[in-house]
Image (cartoon, rainbow, N blue to C red; front, side):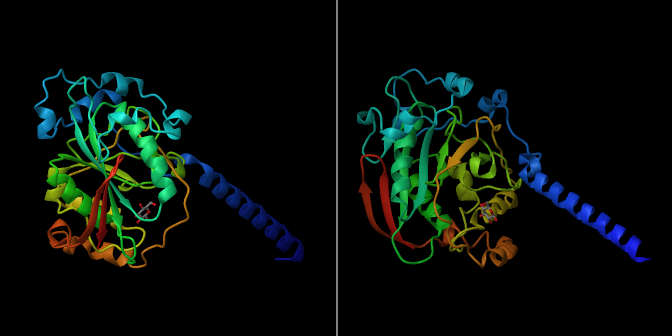
Length: 322
Ligand code: BGC
């Protein structure tokens, strides 16, 4: 090859590289580069899969049953100023952060379990928004905040196990496992359990309203208490950020369950800004061997010390050492 040809080839290589980089850049910007296909339930399917279950006190009410078709049908955008500013009609909320409608009989009783440590500003926003959001759905709910009150690395999954145990003692048939930094955007994302465990936040703004991978099962999840118990809850071993939700997903599959999602127009969430948590360096290794421990690591091996239970006006505060 003479020098002229070499220069020419070199230029072609440059162009090719430039083209490739441009293509990669555009590809990265496209929202559908994420899990492009995943199954979801459309509006018509929703009422067929919801499981109507309430606590004993609600079941004894002599009232006509609440109707949920309007809220699901309308599915209004609710991330509005007045939902965020203050808790409206706060006299309706019972101590401990519990609510049920007074003019109709709720068809769903739901424990909202929120693992927590040192996110005061977010907690304030969460409680204000969620109480405004949830009451318009006319469900029966109670917010349980489980705070890790020690210096160990944050253990999200273990806090869920603790919250689930307490919620079940309080007779709740449905658990919603909820991060404190996530807020639903549309009114029709009914906070209720479906037959299958449900991933509720598949259209999150942080991921440009797409799902990064189909088995993602973190953020906000609804699961019947009975199923949570059958799969032995979550692992107690994940300390620090990441992996515990992937482990949870694997447990569900291992017990022959599958998960479901509502269509994206119901599953929109926004994430409140915060600095990233310290990742769990051990999570990959834990995940590869997790299937060996599903039956021995979870609700049946849960140990913790409850320091205090406080009944606040907007939530039940459970302080634990784990
Ligand atoms: C982590 C999960 C996390 C997901 C999305 C994964 O790599 O293992 O715990 O939910 O990323 O951020």
